[in-house]
Image (cartoon, rainbow, N blue to C red; front, side):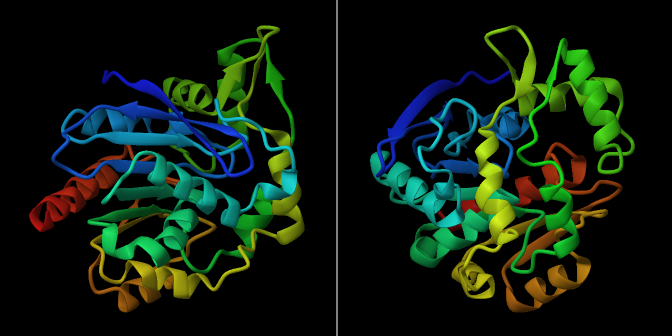
Length: 288
């Protein structure tokens, strides 16, 4: 298991934000990993442990998640603010070049960041999201985001997720659900297992129906000169095969891979995703 250290940076509105810093080569650009709506830095544990120490991997907790502070104003839980927070991190670490890995919401943030920093990206990976976000998937997320739960043990939490999301990962065994629960949840001060995010992140999401307020096809164009990997879950309800085909047609440097039998979103620990990330980083090294 790769070692990591805690890192912190400040937002423009005074929040203390957190990231996990997995050490790696100083001669390669670091990989910044940005998680999904209800997720946190632990979502990329498998990725970081595989790639460190060959690559430095920085796994962020977006505001309101994990060890990052909760926002004073819940309406700041929106993609433009996450982009501002990431800009502050890039400036704090004085990064000239960097690779972006983004899952779901993190993929949207990756696209939005590329508009300004496309020439600084030797590679990027977007996990199960695209410029068209399917209403069916948005409605599913609205059905659970912001609903508080607690469980007496990790086993109880794992069994809950196996029932609630069994259609997303239909082939999983209990040990995989335990890993899932420990990435998504934490122990409360009372010793209960609880979700590791501010329930108020649901407020702007439900009002805006997942709308970023930005033309995402234009944002996607920011990656046109970047070696790009898009990962899709075969059962995804957010990224359709039709949207993926349009993305491929628009982006000549893009590789896509579909992970069979899973929905939104692949964990990136699946063999298909692991092998595709290896290929992407080989392209990045060849360009360095």
